[in-house]
Image (tube, rainbow, N blue to C red; front, top):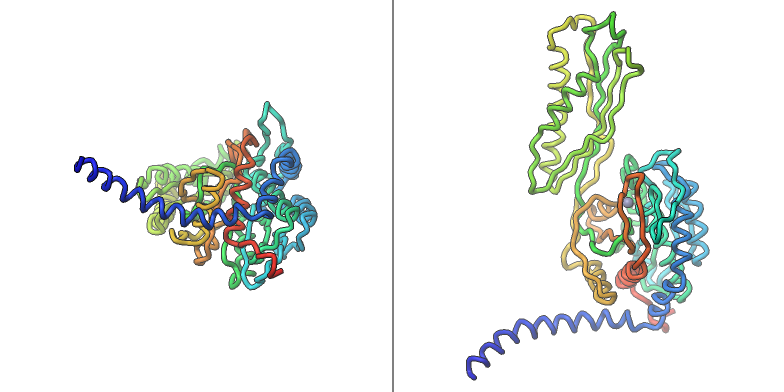
Length: 426
Ligand SMILES: [Zn+2]
């Protein structure tokens, strides 16, 4: 009997303390979930899911390669205006819809990037297979953009007045060589007032990105005199040198922890099969959880290319008729950063997860959130619900089943940090 009692006490103690924590948390969660206007906003999604699918399809079918987001931006401007927001397009091309809060000195931004990785001319027509929508860019970031418009609309229909001003932002330049220019400009413009940034990127509800992965994008260019394949044989060949250097670089050892990766993503050069090329170029993306590893990998690329050029010049042929020039340029650099575990933004996300009965894991990734995080501004990147796959490929797909939960999760997180103004202060 005594023994049983000890067991009970031992097991009850941690359980009870975690219950206490749970109930303190659910009190604040409950407040938001119990607010009639918030409930009305959440209820707006279910009857409008088909409309949201349609907007996603329409937006996806407007090509938006980096630096050519204008046409898609114009449609977002219309959608955000229809949600009662004061909308402007900034000098960078970001569409910014403002929902003024009681406190205009503090701003929370909800963003989704407009651009895709696909070049102009890519067939972006949406096909339907069962419940799936298929098109390049349908999920990344058709999902985020559709959610941005839907959440703005839901707050408008429920006549929610936030405590802090909310900016709904469809931003440019997230993918490829955009180098996060849209987010950089946004943070630059609102920096002193910006309290939190919530980035909607792609599908899903299984993760929350709180750690910004540092990355660098580099371009190698090797040039030579060029010539005829037969009569000038022996002349140094930039493609040969690039291949020799690439082979060396590919063999660079990278640690599993801190996780470090590289990708030879694009290669071009030469003018015809029977000409010795005068130029060869290679684009390389390197990422790491550690800035030190990143720097080491960048040095490895430079050393490999120097060696590749040397190997080409030293091969036993007559190289007297020309020499090679080479350079490595930095196309872009994304700074790293991390959201504090005790931040109100993460607490809001966890509270939203509790309300919608979702579980999500912390993830590290390279997203628009890198910019605010690197400057010490609270930021996360989350999926906007449903399921997707094949991002950055022509086989990209999105399945909207279960999207509603993702929309509610994002809306509750947004209002968790922006807060809903009490009726009397309006
Ligand atoms: Zn994306």
